[in-house]
Image 1 (cartoon, helix red, strand yellow):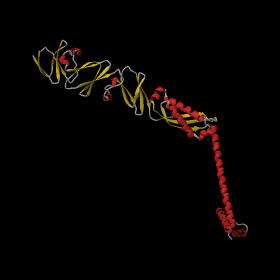
Image 2: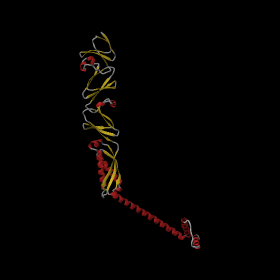
Image 3: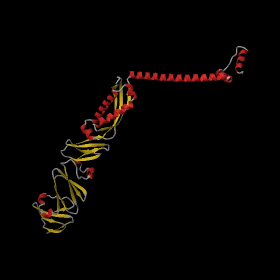
Image 4: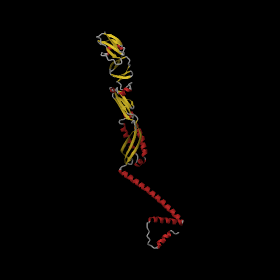
Length: 363
């Protein structure tokens, strides 16, 4: 006889001809020299050399084990003492009922949606071979489609789905305020003036169902609608009305754009004209009109100033007529102005010229 020792938290199994003959827990035992036994740690998964379906027929052994069956459409997640331990693929498994506490979570892979799955396992990449991941940025929103059917909206972040035969697609849209420039639009006014207009539109996608599913290329459709609205409003205005009422026309265009874009799941926040480009001949005519207007304004100003100057001279003459001293002062003022312009004086008329000059300063 041979004396053996089974350590604590271990189990010894004596198996003969595929049958469990003896189950030995912690303690000391006597066995025959030719008898073979297998020692198992109860903190680990039970991995016998014989099929479990045969060994579990032993009631004493079965009472010490937890059996877990994972179907073909399932994935098993094993936790040991509350921490992730391992993944189980389809099959039958057994774990000891020992000091370690084993718990199990089964995931049904027939459904794409992940239920009761620890997010930490997804972040660590433990389930990476079995999942599909879709990422939406902080400024994006999306729609989840499974086999072509809309299931639910998706917010920003990482979204995980089981890999199976279902076809998954995620449609997403940028929900920030966006802008588009509509440049070089050649439009005829009501009086047949051909203009080229540039304007800009700021908008935001608010209804994903309409923007992504009910309308194809919603942003392109918005661009076309803005073109039509611009042509309609400019086409019913004359050139002069357009130049004078740009702000009111832009406001009317904005109101029409809001109503039209709502059907696309888009809200238009602002719309405005940037430039109105005139053809060369109209530009020359406008320049001529502007020059003529400025000249007319200059003439009016000159006439106004001449009238004021004449009125001032008339008032001065009346004052000098009534006051000889004032007249004399005015003469001296002009003589002084003349003297400022003269550097040298040459006299060639005798004393008469000097006498005449003296008379200017004699009362």
